[in-house]
Image 1 (cartoon, rainbow, N blue to C red):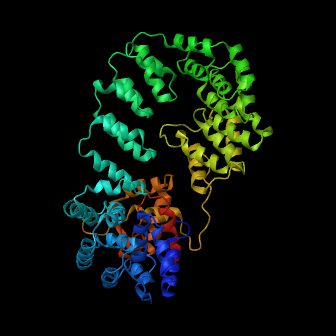
Image 2: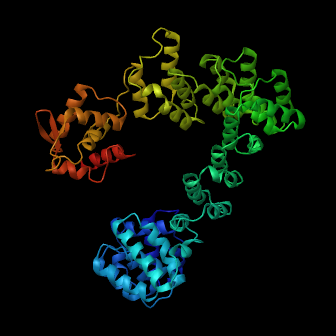
Image 3: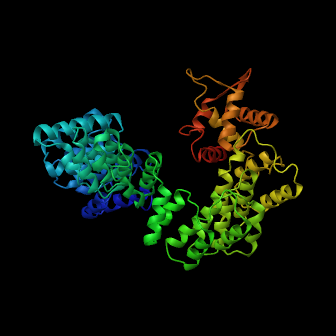
Length: 564
């Protein structure tokens, strides 16, 4: 949507007051249905300039339809009733689900009085965007009934060619409610260019198809449907699905490989004959996928030819549970290759027989692109070696975000059963501490690594009034308490919720100190036993926030600071 919706609405108010109705119409028609719904929410909960708009043209009327004032919205319906613009149809559709009954009924009367196919096509996308609301679902149902009774048309026919993806998805679902023949569904699937819409057809086909439908499924242009046809085929040997061993889709090839192997067919021999006769890259891909024994020298020859597709597949053919030193050296060297480097990363990640310490020395002499591949390959090792790989990347200005992601994804930081790292290897532990010192990590992730590694925690920077993320997390954990239905929470439950929100476990002393501070600030009620609850001021401070929502701790902390 570009700039913020507040800014867009403010600019539209300026245009409407200047009499530039055409500019207002073009701007609002450019919004998608979901953006129009977002504009309505912003006008009612954020930007409040619409209710005081000073204008007499249609631009002002359209904007008043978004106003937080019900009287303005009702007046807008009256003013729009004589306008023929598609924008008016969209605003009326928005008001069909208005929470004020008078506005809703007036909008319904105007919308029905002007109902035709073109206006219905403009209104339906907005109603579909509102369908998850209670009143929105009722409005959509009533509008669809009006289309059927007054226009003698199925609503999905008016939404089928919409520019809005969610509208087209709704149209497809509505169309399939009529228990369409499977062949007709497959025909529409093969002509559907949007993968998001096609997924609805695919799900329907896979759900309804039976073994007797395998043949048309195998002939489909959609890979998921072809794979389903392979699995449904009663006789894999006699039905000719061996041709799908060379399908362009990995999903289809895997299904054909499994079915034929289960039926006693030597799939590797089939691929080898194909390779010997045509040298097709897809035949080599099949040999690699089924784990066929491949001649190392032949693979090296294919790699040296640097043919797109074939060389990369040959690199994949070097994968092994235990790489020999020469192959490891070759793959490590290929990390510098722009064409074969990504495939080399994938092969190293899936192979065994090498360790973090075997590959990490290459970091110092690698360029930025190679360091990114090195980091991903190193992160495939287990345990704390994955953390070391992330810290290594986080120390690089070009790879900071990748490094933080790799560290955050390390299972060793989440498991409750992991010991402190490298207890019997002081050299590796020292390397971990060095990398942690050099890494550019946010404080929460740094403290998580320090806690799990048994290191001294980095202190939180002092705030203007001494508030910390621990205080914010405790308030969020207590959100909703102090009321009749949820009077209080046990201290243990509060501690668990706060620890989950900030990513580290709070010590007993730290917890007691934080609770005392919140009680002294009048945000938490003095405890009765081990139970805690928020005061009315505490509830007001965290209103609208969820303890584990992204950014909730930061927002609660900012509110604490503003309060001070």
